[in-house]
Amino acid sequence: MKHERGLTMLMHAGMLGLVMYFVMVYVLKKPTSVAEKHSLVYASFAFIYMVTVGHKLPSFTYFTT
Image 1 (cartoon, rainbow, N blue to C red):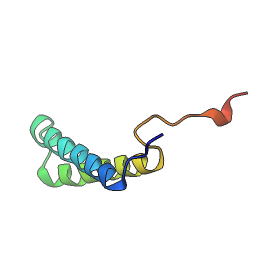
Image 2: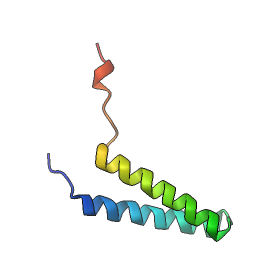
Image 3: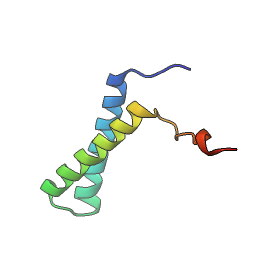
Image 4: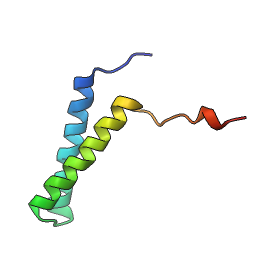
């Protein structure tokens, strides 16, 4: 299985944060300061998720019998 570089994951998280910012400002009509903070939080969670799990859903093989 080929793993992505950390820089690629960081760029993907940044793009997600940018998209979320524009959605919050132009679609949801949130103030720019709120949209800025929320999009940074979403991008951070996305980056942490991608670094720990990757782009796939986590497998819960620990709970199978």
